[in-house]
Image (cartoon, rainbow, N blue to C red; front, side, top):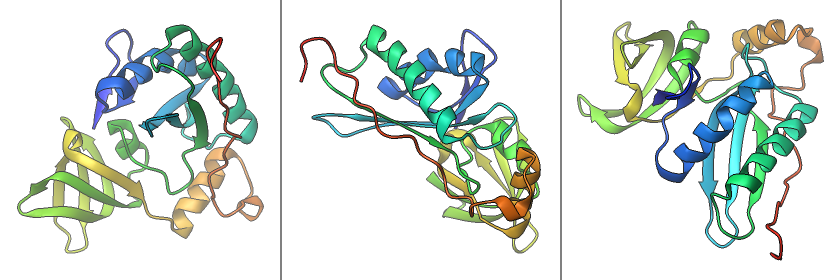
Length: 203
């Protein structure tokens, strides 16, 4: 589910086609600004929306101001590269506390917390798994199931995986951000206003 950028040591979510090209182009700039790309999607046809989910390099949540900084930086890159003809929308958000697990480093970073995962390709006849994150090794995510057994999930076959919101996760996220847990807003992802960069002469 994750891949290494060919030109650097930046670990990216596993993407293909247009999404992969955009991710590879913007990831170095995000890294220079102190951010990491968690997820990227291109949705819609007439006026596509490029959805970017990011967090800080240490895994802590980004703020609205961070989202705006990322929006401007990414918008400038895409205006030059012009990967999508015509007008498009750019949407940047924090990964949230119950964040998706899209890279091997996510499975390592959040070991010990609860998560749910769904596979594209069934494993022993099963697509959905839930349990405790145990890390990652050799291109696989490891999750301990409720019965105590461990499932080895190929990262490239994971359709989606997300942490389960628990008190322990909220406390860990608050500590990571250097915040008092009482000051948390419930973990809801903060999102910058949508931007709509247009090419010259486009409406």
